[in-house]
Image 1 (cartoon, rainbow, N blue to C red):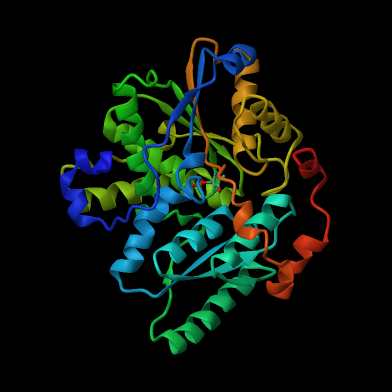
Image 2 (spheres, rainbow, N blue to C red):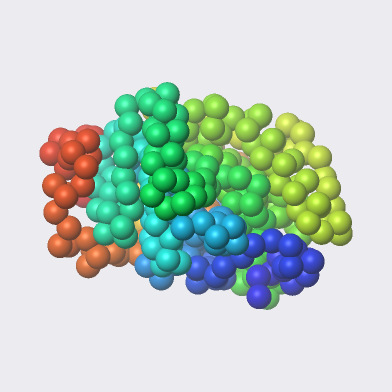
Length: 366
Ligand SMILES: *Cc1c(COP(=O)(O)O)cnc(C)c1O
C-alpha cells in the first residue's frame, strides 16, 4: 500500500492508481563524497531504480496518470517533450506494459547519446513518434493527430502533459514524501535539512514540497531550474503546488488545503546554462564526480542539480547539514531491448540524432 494512502485512506478510493514501479526506492548514504564536498551528511534517493525496466522520476507520476487513462477506457495516450525526453520514453514503456498505445509529440533538442537510446526504446515499445520544429507546429499536430486517431480508434487519445506534471502526476511525489518520511521513521536516514531536485516541469519539486508539508517534515526542497522560466519558474511551481493541494483536499477533506507563497519556495536559476538539455561544464563535472562514487547522473537534469548542491557545499553552507539529492534519472540498463533496433525504421525526422554528432560535452560522459 502506498504510504500516502495509508495516511489518507479516502484518497485510495478517490484517486486512480496502478502499480508500475518498485517502491519504496532505497536511500543511500555517500560518506566519502560528503567528506570531500564539505557536506555534513549526504544521501541519494535512488529513484533511478524506481522501475524494473526503466526507472527515474516519471514512474511515480505515471502510476496515477496511466491509471486515469485506463479508468477512462482510453486505448491510446498522447504526450509531449523534446526528442530525448525521459518522460516520453517512460510513457511509451509503461503504456505498452498496460496495453495502451502511446503517441509522442516531440521537439528538437541538443544531441546526446541518451537521446538516441531513449528514441530507440520508445520505438521498441511501440510508440508512434512525431517530430515538430516548433511548439506551434506541435499544436497543429495535436489537432491533426487527435482527429486521425479518433477516426481510427473511435476515441481521441488521453492527453498527458509534458513531463507528466499535472496535479495527478505530482501526486506521485506527494506520495514520495510520505515514503521518505517512513524511511526516516525507520532510521534509514535522519530528516534532511535540504533536498535538491532538478526542476523541469516541476511536478517532482512541487509534489515533494506539498507532501513534506503534509507529512510534517521540515526539509526544504531546493529546486534547480533546468528549463525555461515558463516551465520551471516561480509562478509555475506555485500554481502546480496550489492546484495539487486543492485536488487532494477535494478528494479527501482531511488533506489540509494549504496555500503556498513565494517565501516557501527555494528556486535556483544559476545552473541552467544557456539552453534546455545543453550541458554545462559544472553539470558534466558533477556527473563525473558522482560516477566515481557509483551513482549515475546525466547532464540535462541531475548533473545541474548536483552541480548546485556541490557549489553550495564548496561555499561552506552545507557543513552541518543533512542533504538529500533526489536522483530522478533512470539507471536501468536497457541495451538488450534496443540492440536490434535500426534507427532507420524511425520516422525520417529523427535520423539526424543518429547521423549528427553529439554535443561536445556529451563526449566526456561516453
Ligand atoms: C523529467 C525529469 C526531471 C524533471 O522533473 P520535473 O518533475 O519535470 O521537474 C528531472 N530529472 C530527470 C532525469 C527527468 O527525466
